[in-house]
Length: 103
Image (cartoon, rainbow, N blue to C red):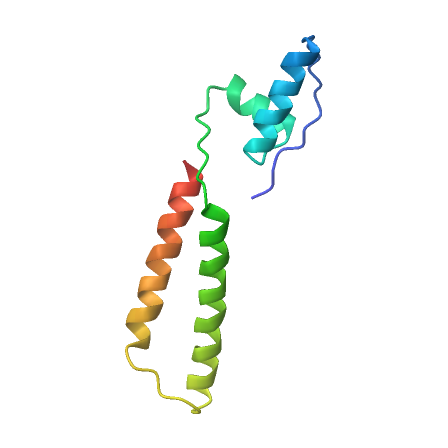
């Protein structure tokens, strides 16, 4: 899905203190000032999940490990017990995280 190109400019005047606070909040949430202000202006709920980056990093590592095990099993070098269940559970966790991130 291609994102719509941002071509319009909105100018607003704020105090230096307000500008600093907006930048700080955007940075705290890992957003650009533009994205932060657009989300706020459109009434979107902004949720910060502490530690999510660590969870995603771990999930990616587990996914790589699962792929390596699958490759070795397909080559006949190892026998995987309950591999289907493991892959299914991994898929469910991944999908639940995707749904959380879409909110």
